[in-house]
Image (tube, rainbow, N blue to C red):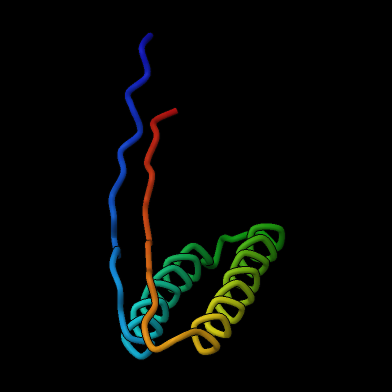
Length: 88
């Protein structure tokens, strides 16, 4: 069976001033955290909860590092946020 080619979506792509860049990044990260938190429910196992917590902690750490990079950089920042969906 032939696999379909991956689908690419450029959510954010361009040059932004620092304030705009941080706002966009913050919104993307908050949306992802909310999505992950919605996967925790009353029937979630301890293992599932720990997995989601680790993913959120890793995302927060990555965001902190990118935020520091943006703040140390110049007045403008190039952002590229892409989604690649590939059927299995």
